[in-house]
Image: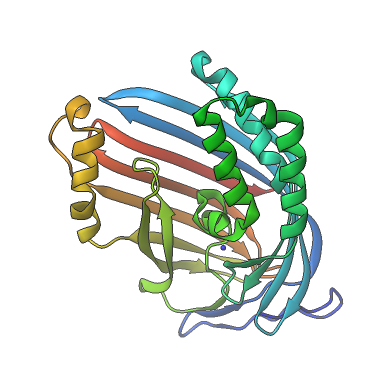
Length: 296
């Protein structure tokens, strides 16, 4: 998941009625608060296995701007997780430790608004080592726990790949900046989703955008993801190995990602986003996350 002007200067906005062209740039600003809510559900054999709701408050600062992008600071003010299944309560509490290293992020966005670099990588590693010693190290007695720590070392040792595949950051830092063209759907970016059904699988996708409406203060647009049809065929063997016996022989792989955004032209920031991501193997086996993001 571009230039800045100081507050006293007018925002750089270009808008042409005839073509619906908009030039969207971030402007230097601080302490924008965002409410982020997402609801994650996992269904297997038609039964709800996981039902988790997460509420986060971000404080976002646009620190600086360059010819090729932006410097952005994110601080997590609050992070709450609510689990509808009591059986997973202990696991949810344990997983909160993994949020600590990324409570503060300094990132560089490219000129389209997607994450390009993590600038406080050293601090993230230090925070991971701190929480690993204080909370996680005593649990490394089993092979599973050792693997968990190993994965943490890899993830936090080089956070950028993980950020790029984390759904929340993909939604929030979608490549929306730059020139908005017309109302016809057009390609704006590509990336990979980290599969929630098949561990270790990275699904390539393309994002297409449609400009819905514009006015003097902002605009609305929608995003939709597309994947190659061959992706499902490549995953058939994995499905047969992992799920066929329990979930039946039918396998029809689909990814559905759609997001509706509202943006403020005076800051370049989103004001509201409603998004849904669904990864589906068949009607009884799928993973879905619904996002609601708004500036508060």
